[in-house]
Image 1 (spheres, one colour):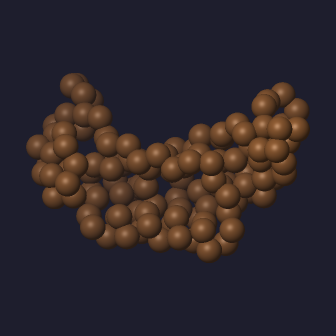
Image 2 (spheres, rainbow, N blue to C red):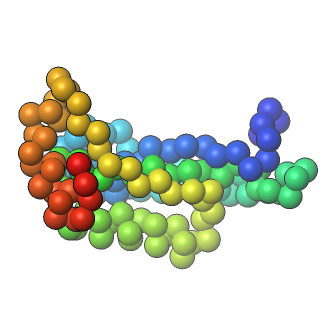
Length: 125
């Protein structure tokens, strides 16, 4: 924390808290691992800096529209966030982003399925 400005964010691409979606999309971190990392940064970074802001807090990034998502996925994401709240784990921000499907990526072949998923949850694509 020596070389930053208090109020900084440690961006963390959690993407989803659904273990099934994590496996299907070959993502890197399971929910318990993500929780541990977020909690650790929060505990160390919540100390106040010279400007009164917490030194360094995690910023969580979720992605919607990943192959394999269901309504259960969104319940698991909410449960993850509630766990942080209930355990007094501080975060600076939570971003919820929509998956971007570009040719010729592997998701391009699943574009119509992703569109249907996003329509079912009220998003646009």
